[in-house]
Length: 408
Ligand code: SAH
Image 1 (spheres, rainbow, N blue to C red):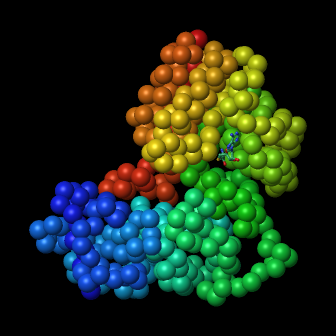
Image 2: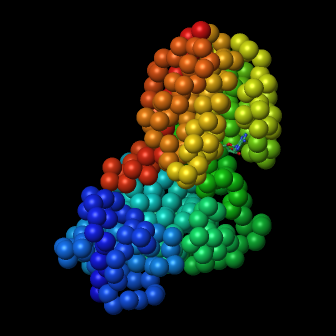
Image 3: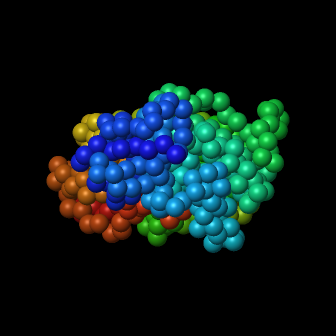
């Protein structure tokens, strides 16, 4: 097996099980090799740290996968990682009211660059690393053997496809074999979340088609919306809107820059009315508007809304973008705090991994001070537990949210 020596002073986080090694931390590769392969990784004194996957074409040149010197890093090792991730979700498979959940959450499940979601009997995988591309056949076969999915869809995270040299083609696998599917074969996938019905179009949509990391937070807002006027900002296909309707909101205004997401939101209200999971006249309570969220909140009437949900996209894609992103988060929240009714509720989120929970709270406190309001934090929210946060990999703690009461 190949050996890699880490430069002096660069080993600390790796010894604490952080899985990423960038090229600047690698001192020597023995013997030198240019193809991707497994390697034993040592510190500058020659002490074993971990076993990892070395690929100099990847923007993360070395992924550490096992800190056990006796681990057999072969294909069956990757198979075990996939099985363990799925077994950790065993309780989700028996849920009567939720069939959409995450099966593999990348590095937090010890599988670099692989996100896999279950949508009823279908599985959707998003890959963001060359490691994931290399081991895709093992991952597909293991998931197929374990779960017999109706099909597996594979897409690439657009943020990483060029830096990792990954194809952005949508691929489908049936019974473990790659299959060309025609448009007619590609029907929408129907699934349940917390007793509400949704549909995800194949190959399209954002993420793998739905943001199931917000599942528990959608339930959390239900207790604040009865008989209230609700504004759902960055609604996408209406996860929060459907919950607000179920919990008896007086009206819901849904705003998103994506017109197709908003049309799909209306379709999903009909779907739930037809299935009896939303009251019959729900559609009449809802207005949609395709608009930029920052501009939209500035234009809303003061004291119109009792509840405002702010779920913007990842504004800080990297740490370098954090300063601008912080300004944007502050602005969005400040304006919402100014416009909401006295005593109103804001459910506010940041899904930027680069923004820590502490920083987000600090940003909200600046927003409150500038808006001239007092704010009480009622609930602290996070990503659902099928998206676990691995302590040795802080990047896995990405979704932060707070339910706030604004006092004027
Ligand atoms: N709340 C949603 C998920 C939101 S994801 C749910 O529960 O499913 C973020 C959304 O913000 C996406 O739908 C995206 O289309 C939208 N978006 C991105 N930039 C935007 C902008 N500048 N203004 C309004 N919406 C935006």
